[in-house]
Length: 69
Image (cartoon, rainbow, N blue to C red; front, side, top):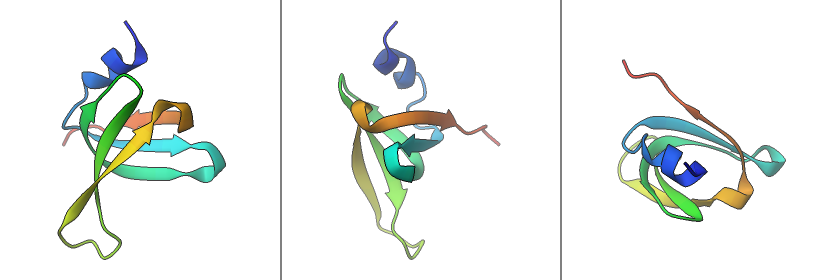
């Protein structure tokens, strides 16, 4: 199983993404491709609308899937 296939099991779950140079994203995993994935994040003011950002696997140091409540 590849990393992308593993990560796709967590679509629609909350996660934290850690990258090089202290890059940090927290949001909801929305989709996974072969070289990247998309995370829905809130903007800085914590109000709608949310934004979809693309994160490339090459830039990822670690991912933490958050527990469901």
